[in-house]
Image (cartoon, rainbow, N blue to C red; front, side, top):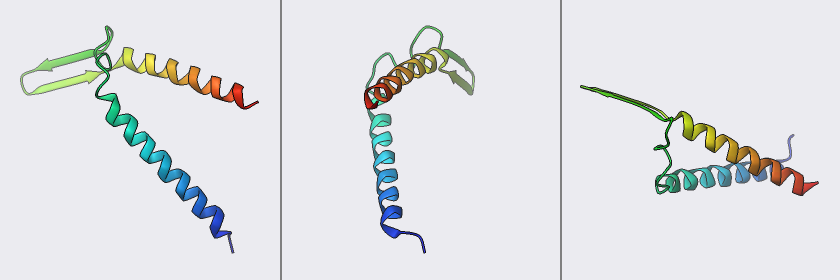
Length: 76
């Protein structure tokens, strides 16, 4: 029989992570440059619109990579 306390702890951490991610998504709409960088592709035609946030994705990827590397180095 698996240990239910470790399963409960894992569910609690997962729930907190999802809540944190939801909060970050809510705050992302308030960042004025997010999604409006040069390099983000927007196609708008009659009855059709498409948006590819290429530059924003690259910038966010670099920032998250730097942040995670900093956290992992500080944990050592």
